[in-house]
Image (cartoon, rainbow, N blue to C red; front, side, top):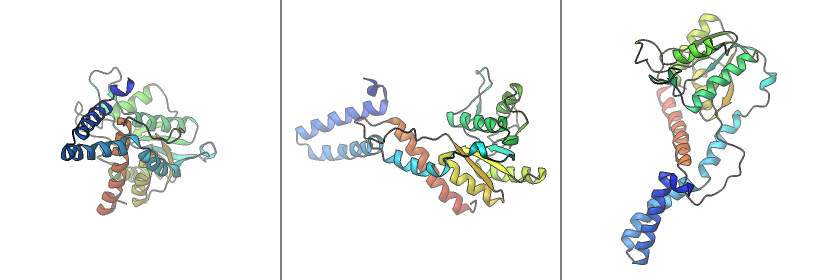
Length: 249
């Protein structure tokens, strides 16, 4: 029953029923036109293909030596989906990926792995013109004293390239030599290359891993979560080539 609470699975099942009816009535043209999307949805949403691809991309950023890392000048956590919220008690909302990035950076600071926490950039605030939407998150971390040292942000940034540019300027101004870079493991390859292009060598600290240790397997009903994962995976693969074409990596 739970499968039919997923709109994608419910639509797919309805398509399968219609396809079966077309085959029964020998309406071959209708069966072919409906069968192609049914097969594609099944391959993308039921097979473990995307799980395997994402795990392969994330695997280089698995670390077991974080506790033994020497202290860095700063840890920078790239932005991810934070936004102002007029109706939230906190004044902001963020994606699961964003929350894990920022809390990972805070945890590194609390473990004395970095003296300064630098939150990534974000879009301009709709409530406070000229201010990044990251400011409420920064204020929350400071007010709760979650990080022992300085907490700042990279201002208004449209993408990881902008964040790399802004951070390179900040690091040069403060003469920082060693930087920990926190972002989703799936995004780390592109982010690390963008920072390297600006002359900032980083120690990658991946988070927001999608691999959960469960065996890869086929499922009968296609999962909407797998389509979301396809979107993230393709975003990174296409984004890599776009960054190369623009000379950002």
